[in-house]
Image (cartoon, rainbow, N blue to C red; front, side, top):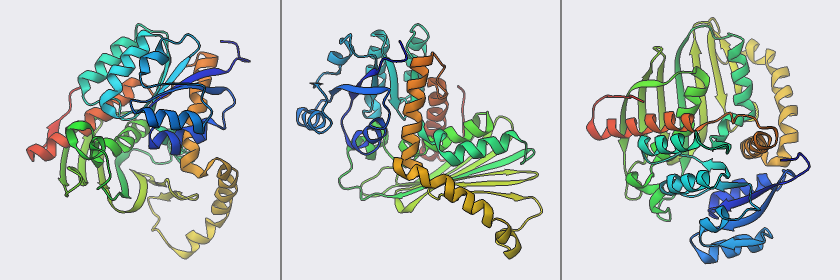
Length: 353
C-alpha cells in the first residue's frame, strides 16, 4: 500500500460501541476511510450508513469480505461471532481490527491464531487501555526499574449499569457476559502487559443479581514469576478503573479516569503527607497541560481509541507488527475463564495455556 492511499475500512457490527467509541476516533484519522458497513439488523446498518455517509451497506458481512476495494475490517460484534468472522476475514486476507474479548474459549483463540499464521493480514486486538496516556507513562517508569522487584499487582474496574436493557451477550456467562469476562479482560491484559508474565493459578468469588449472572467479582491470582494479583470488579457502583503495582522500592498507582491519575510512592513514603503533596504540585500542573490537548479527542479514555486505530493504520501502511496480538487476547481469555471456573467450582484453578 502506498502511503498516499487511504485504508478502505469496512465496519462489521454497527452497535453502541461503534457509535460511541470507534467512529468518533476514526473520524479524526485521515489515513482511514469507512467505505462499508454490515450488521445483521437491517435498520441498524441503514441508520449507521446514513449517519456517517458510508456508501456500502449489507446485512451479510461476507459481502464486505468479498469486496476487493476493502483493505481492512473492524469486527465490532459480540464475542460469540468473533471466531467465525475472524476466520472468514483471514481467509479473505483482510487486515483485522477486533474488539475484545477475543473469543468465548481458548480453543477458539487457538483457531484464530493458527489461521493468522498462514495469512499476511495484520490483526490487532482492541485492548485499548494499553494506549492510555498514563498506562504508557507507567510502562516507561517500570522500564527504569523504579519499583525494583515486583511483589503484587492490584486492579479495580467498577461501573454502574442498569442491566434490565442489557443484551444477553452482556448478561449471560455462556454468551460472554458478566463483569469478569467482558470487562476484566482489559485488566488481565494489563497485568500481562506490565509484568511480561502470565497467571498460573487463580481463585475467585462472585455475586449475581436479577440481570447479570456475574455482577461483581473478587479475584486472587499468582503469576508464574511469583507476583500476586488481585482484582475487584462490579457493575453496581460508581465508575473507576485503576491499577496499582507494588515493588520493593515503591509502588506505582494509575487511575485511568483522572488526568493526574499517575503517582509513585517510594518504599519509605506514606501517602497524603503535606510536604509530599506540595512537592507534587508541579507534577500535577505538568499532567494538566498534557491532558488539555487530548480533550479534542474526547479526553484520555476516548483518546485510547484514536491511538489504537492510528497504530492499526501504521501497522498496515508501514508493515509493522501489531503491539497487541491474538496471543495476548488468548492469555487474557484464559485468565478470565479460569476465574469463572474458580467461582463455579469454589476452588482454585490452574491455568495451562
